[in-house]
Length: 377
Image (cartoon, rainbow, N blue to C red; front, top):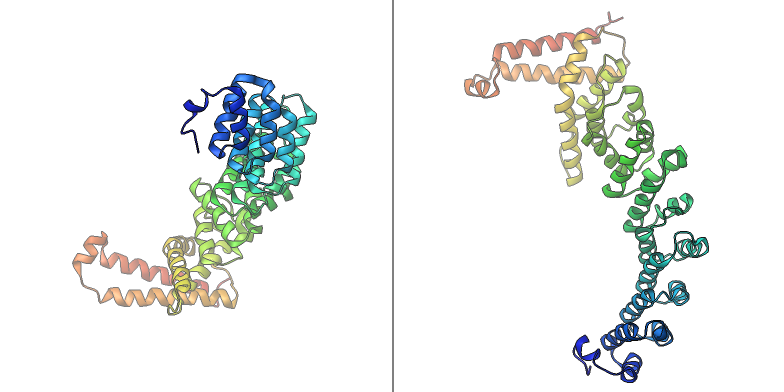
């Protein structure tokens, strides 16, 4: 490297600059290209175009692209965007193609869309998606949907941003929305799309997507609904409740409108009995599952006991009876324990009256027994 900075290079005459453009190291070629472009304008195009194609260093070629874009040399840029062997050069070139293309030039805009369709490099795809700025021409929705299923997280996120920015819910079918949302793997892309769906009041479509999604995406969708403090009827959440996985159930409970409904009562009973019957922990995964089951118990217990007291007892099948029996046995064990527990400090710290607390628990057991009675209607 003969020259140490751009200040030295810009003092050279044009002949030396052209030689440096062809024979200098990577940095010198960049400085020479900038200076030649400034001095000669479009007269410099042949020399810089040649280096944009032939410079061995990808970084140098990217700088040539910037100079060529400044000079408005579309034809060389379009060739580089399609054929340069380095994805970073192609990505940079597509960014500048978008910048210099007129809003009404449909032919050139179509070329950029064609590159997005055919170039499978995540770098190039993201460059086009993030740089797209044609108000009158949008990337076709089917192409965006395809990009939104790309393996690259950044491509998926960029595609979702284009969809929510430029399209409405009426532009996608319910199946397309469900499939797309169920396929998103990150909170960023999911939350971006979910907020868009909320703007269009597509709550039921969000729930349907959660039903279809793999467990990891299902939890992300449900977390979003919990964060938004949304609630739904049992009929809306009924299919999701059939999964009966603690992680899912605790989230369903957070968004469920609790009503005097037998199916809700039985679902709560199942979750409570599941927590009571937890096996001994043998692995980390079991520990996490039990934590979720226990959290569900803590959140669901009061709802169950409220419903069991206000609803008229009805006949229930044997599996549900077993769940009720498990809950009652657990409560009776608690009664026996607390009946002998005379630590006044504990009751004071909890803000409870021991006699009233035990009496309430006994009443809860009495209500459960009515449901277990053969006389239940």
